[in-house]
Amino acid sequence: MSSATLKKYYEGAEKILVAIDCIIFGFDKETLKLLLFKRKIAPFAGEWSLIGSFVQSGESVPEAAQRVLEESTGLNNVYLEEMGSYSDLQRDPGSRVISIAHYALIRLDEHKQQLVETHQARWFPYDDLPDLILDHQEMTQNALAKLRRKARYQPIGFELLPEKFTLPQLQLLYQAIYQKKLDRRNFRKKILSMKILEKLDEKDKTNSRKGAFLYRFDEKKYQELERKGMNFEL
Amino acid sequence: MSSATLKKYYEGAEKILVAIDCIIFGFDKETLKLLLFKRKIAPFAGEWSLIGSFVQSGESVPEAAQRVLEESTGLNNVYLEEMGSYSDLQRDPGSRVISIAHYALIRLDEHKQQLVETHQARWFPYDDLPDLILDHQEMTQNALAKLRRKARYQPIGFELLPEKFTLPQLQLLYQAIYQKKLDRRNFRKKILSMKILEKLDEKDKTNSRKGAFLYRFDEKKYQELERKGMNFEL
DNA sequence: AATATAAGTGTTTAATTTACACTTAATAGA
DNA sequence: TCTATTAAGTGTAAATTAAACACTTATATT
Image 1: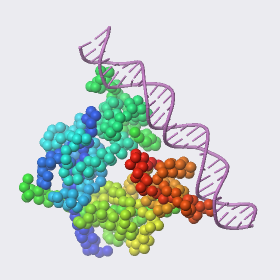
Image 2: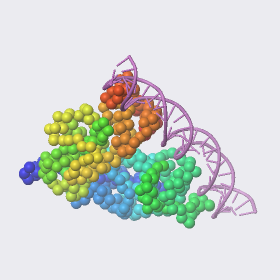
Image 3: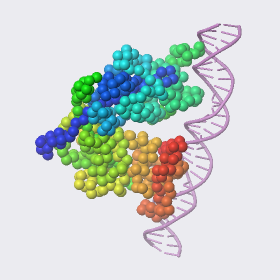
Image 4: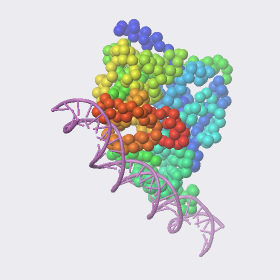
């Protein structure tokens, strides 16, 4: 095939605007939350929206998503997962745009509150979201569905908790994700039997006089056990 | 925000070539197979490749994938699942292209062999694939990983079998997907206990003198049970 | 010193999963 | 027509895992 034909093959195709959107999850005490943004541009300026951006010519899709997350929360190295594409021809009245949605799990205590303010953003409880523009509501629903499934067989919940956390906190998190109560004793038994948590000598006394011991997720131990065939499953 | 600024927002962004690629799975007796194609255009003309196409301006991503599948196999309404995007800047030496990979499950007995021939395509056992161009090997690996996970909790295996199939066939399929032997009695017990198969009065005698009863997957019964909270899981 | 509160702990029962071997139906060939 | 062959079909016991459930402990507050 000649170079001219090659050129024709690639150039005969139509280029399209590609964006990424981020569903940013946080966890606060006992509530799963999303970070939403007041949209600055038309159409729908002033309405609540996920944060997103066009993919630029010099970056890959995950790079674009990381860039957006860093710009909006100040965090790099957050847990980020691609969810899927949204490409209805009419999804954005502003232009034909294919968006590749991602969900991110961030630690509420670590992100830069100041950036949230400059972006006119706000954390909303997942159960009490405002109306969202475009297909962003569909995206958030799919994100929670994916998060739920994934959290069942991968230890990603820890990405939503501070580095040091208590078992009651961890249980509240999983209860929020699955939307159902778990038995305290059975939960502890199961999670501790996996031997992926390091118990610290500190207690967190913010919730009780007695205080609850703090733990830390041990990534190395987890990967070691995973290599040996252990399956995280809650 | 003025319409001029709006224009600038959308037009300031760079458009990109978007493609879809399809990992087409089939199942033959006891072997999981992929349909691969001899690439017709440079670069890498003549080498083995997944089938793909650019997303056209008048179609969505799933529409593009369905179009490609119909063109290459003659089948519409095949099981099709989006897998994720591939967007490394250097992934295609021909041009910067973002590809959204999909996997499809098709019935080997139904697709049009003739189309396979006109496309210079061939079915390869998954365990014995030729070298593939670009990042297509990575795509196939991710596709199998996704298929394996999905098959565990959704009854998608049936998409790879003829409409009527025997339990030994079904077991061979799951053994091929999970790459491990299953106990015949336990497998039957489990799958039959779900009550999603309709037993027919016919036998398939191609594999034994005795013959094995044919069954049919009952989509309606499945959806009914799912609604009531039943969980498919193998 | 008494009180209040959430954290922490074990055991019994039920359900599920695993391991395992013989019988049956039907054709092919003697 | 009888015998041999072959894959299909079937049940039970043991082991593992999940579920249900209530009292004790540590510590700050009054």
